[in-house]
Image 1: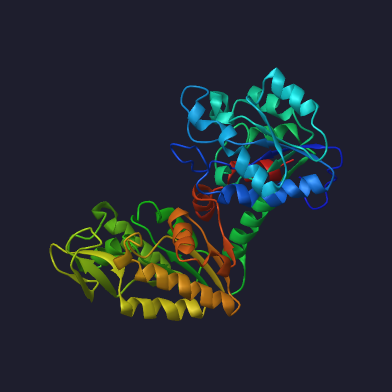
Image 2: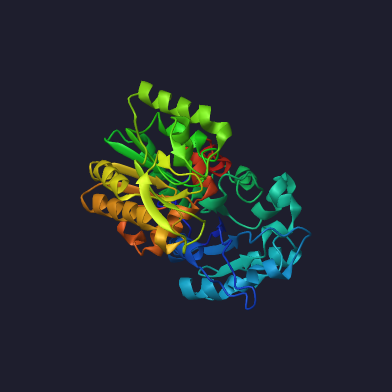
Length: 398
């Protein structure tokens, strides 16, 4: 494994696996959110400034039957050019003779974008021959796509086998790993994880792994009601996974045995319908009347959470506290975001990850006021679960 900081890119063609799976306008096909492209620009510029050329590999969407115009990467050329301040060459395939020719003729300082690797089913099946063809196009391989690092696909994992001495993490992927490792493995205390979202079932493995890593675990969002019901509380028609009531109790017992504090909401904002315009009340979380559902944490809970967050040295946030998409039920999530910002200002290291948490921190305009915002989504969740990511392992292994 090489380091992007010390590798000599002069006159080298760098194959960079990026995650340019960005949202497009359905009519104009213009990029509507360029965050993922923006995140990869430092790695691209690093190679170019060091005298190398760049060959970009990415997927877009989930094409089912080969090439589909809607999923062509040609739609994102303009965004790459604007953000990189460099003109971008485009090849309408990724392993054809044309691709080989364009890669061979690529000059230092140039960027070549190859067509969607998922136009070939061999990409997602992790086909070795397909990976070998991709590998033949460049002199070195950089994986900068944390969002796909949990997939053992040809361009994210298998391709690394063909660069035993010339493979490395990109700046984005490196920063992602460093940030998550810092929260999980640092000896600084106290460490606090804030875990929200709708369902316990989707976060069980994460919570169980965090019990071995954290001092405090704040649980909010829809999953909190499963924990409250498991302890005998009345939760009305709030979201509950009855099959996971025993598991919720087991998690509480495991945390207690390890002297890890699990903090649940004590009050909640309830509504008589799943709507922003519903009638609202604030009640004790274990005293929700029949026909009412909890959609956000209450004021008392916010104070409880705030005290824990403010005293923490390392903070991980994954999942909202309520239905923050509805303005009347975003208070709990917004308060958590502001508490994390304040703790960060006081010297804490804060990591925000997972689609809804990232959407929330961006919605409230606070993304640049926390230590790190992960682009990983599913990859970060698996990393938090303690699962080895194929894309990461492929780079680390020689």
